[in-house]
Image (cartoon, rainbow, N blue to C red; front, top):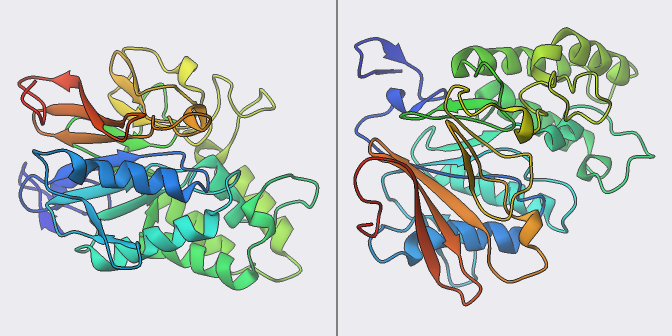
Amino acid sequence: MTPARNGVEADPRDGVAGLPGTPTIASLSDVHGHLDRCRSALVAVGDHPDLDPLVEPDADGRLHWAGGDYVLVFNGDLVDRGPDSRAVLDLVDRLRKEAPDRRVRYHLGNHENGLLYPTPPDVDRRFGQRVTDDERRRFDGWLLDGDVTAAYQGYRYTYVHAGAVDGVEAAALNDELRRVAATAIEAVGTDADAEVHRRVFETHDDLLGYGSSGDGRGPDAGPLWLDFSHLPADAPPQVVGHTPQDAPRVKGNVVCEDVVLRNLDSPGGEAVLLETPDGLDALVREADGGVSHRRLSGDGPGPDGR
């Protein structure tokens, strides 16, 4: 742990206060197995003339950590729907291993649920149907080690997949997720697998529950499921995904960065958000391959002086 700016110990697992200096927080969400869109968003940082690159490709085109002063937050739902879920997870794991400790954060989204428990065979398009028991143990191990968490506290914003009306406390939510993993990993591949996971989801309904609406998007859903429409403008500041948008959307204190799926039928549109102590910005890939900048909140100019 590193002394936080307020003089108390802070865990770099849970927030930027646990790290030295003032690194820029880069975030994106809801890649959903579309590796090309994930790559385009990550490379957009280095394509901006006034920013150090976040990642850089090798001779074979694989992305690697570029060494800049960043924290990279993958804000949930990296799997399912698209063709490259396993390749996206491999990219996250490679960047995590190459970056300084705790500089790459991967948040559990509702679609990662299928990596926690056996996915029913009648559920379509789920990557969880294709993972082995060993891969599920590996994912649970990431949870136990704090490499996959549920939330991250930035300078102003808390990063969590779907958000909460009253906000979330990152350290407490991450501790709860670790308890989920400690229970789940013992049952993987055993006859008790499905029953243990049913009990886990009942016991930790405040974290994993999808509420009473039936589709997981109602006003009483948990922070992996809540629809953006139910987050009021005066909610505690949060950056969320989960609810598809055409472009990063600001609603008072909350910002939704889920832009990949709505833009799949046209070139560009993917985005990465950047938070510094001065504010929050969006870099958006344009149809011609260029990168546009938009200041979302804060004082002073963004990365291109505007």
